[in-house]
Length: 408
Picture 1 (cartoon, rainbow, N blue to C red):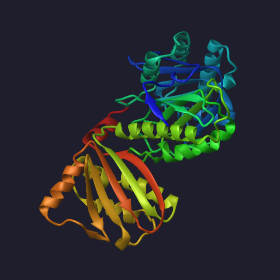
Picture 2 (picture 1 turned 30 degrees about the vertical axis):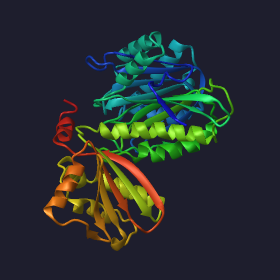
Picture 3 (picture 1 turned 90 degrees about the vertical axis):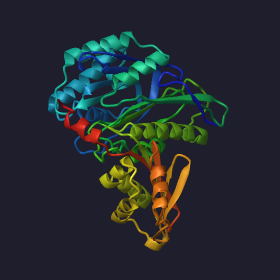
Picture 4 (picture 1 turned 180 degrees about the horizontal axis):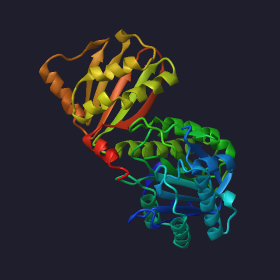
């Protein structure tokens, strides 16, 4: 059974973290460091955007099976920076390794921020040195690290749980994620930006990478704020094994606990989309294939018309059905059912291809359901048994303002 606890990346045994101000940003914390007392098995998911940042290129080339530290800067994405960017990413690893007495291959590196700007390595070196001296565990360390990796985020995204595995071992999982804009991850294992560091004291091998990919596919990869996949998306899972016990690669309790954590931070990313006022959850059932279900989820949460309707609590369900039809998924209209849920209200909208309601009073009920901080759209295609769930947010005036002014 998964138990939610107050914590973050330093909650599992053997992890320390820090977040400092290096000067890349004018005032805010902008450089974070996570450190494991012992080498940890590393499972990493990267952006599948063909334009990849320098840190992503460096990490993918090394493909380390073990990591002991992860250094992250915010304020500069180190993307579209050519050979100099690669050298800067390598230097971030080298400086961190020197400060911690590690081999550079044991250090992961991530960056987020403006694209197309060279790194100020004087500031980065200073920040790494300072962060290495300030490593500690506890909630303040979690908080500092979380703030150091934020860009346009308005809230921290973190989660911690404990779970007893099938062999009786009690293990902890902690996670911190950032992401608010330029969000539609398609992270693949072995191949605003979503960056996440997940720590656990469970005992895992590199064979867990396949399951890590499955979890990403059903959590962060089912999030979309604006349909734009970042150049920097990276998600790193560290497992240092300090809890002891058997290898948890195939332990169902661990798998479900990790999936729970990743789903929690995925929802947090969607809810904190740039300018967002509402979280949109889309659940598709009755699809012929899993791929159809996922495609339809993304079609709905990425539709500007659907997102705008949710923002205005406008019960224009035709926009949702437009997205259903535009998805290319197999269905017969007479089998489709559409329901909207908000708060404690669950309102049937469409059944057998025809509207359930017609009068103005019924329309107002739908509007009331949509006038909630979290709105769920339920679509049953009625042609199969496959399903998928994803998360997005409404489209507001502030989204345009934030992105019109982002670099200025």
